[in-house]
Image (cartoon, rainbow, N blue to C red; front, side, top):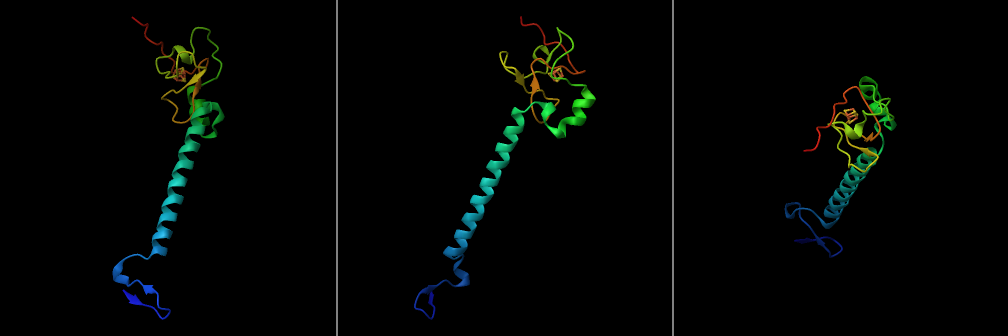
Amino acid sequence: MAEDVRGGARPRPEEGLTRRELGKLGLGAAVAAGGLLLGARRARAQDDKLVTEIEANAPIVSQLQYVNESPFPDKHCSNCVLYQGAPDSDRGKCPLFVQGVVAAQGHCMSWAPKPAAS
Ligand code: SF4
C-alpha cells in the first residue's frame, strides 16, 4: 500500500473498496432494507383494511357488487367457499381481492356455498 503526503496509508485502486466506500455501500444496503420493510409493513396495513376501504379495489368491488353487509341472511362471506377467514373472525381474505379483507357478513355475486363438513 502506498503512503499519501500526510503519511497515512492510501489504498490503491487495485486493492478494492476503501472503508468509506464500504461504509456508503453498507448505508445504501441498510436504506434499501429499510425501504423493503416499510413496503412490507404498508402492504400488511392494507391487508387489515376492508376491501371497500382501499381505493384501488373500487373497480372490482363494483364489478362483483361486493357489500360489507349481505342483503341475504343465509348468504355471506363467512359461509362462502372462497372465504379464508377464521371461523370466529369478523373479516378474512378472499382470493378475488388482491388487497384487503372482506367482512364475514359481506357478500358478492360470486358467493358459492361452503361444502358441509362431513
Ligand atoms: S367470493 Fe364474494 S361472497 Fe365469497 S368470500 Fe369472496 S367476497 Fe365474500
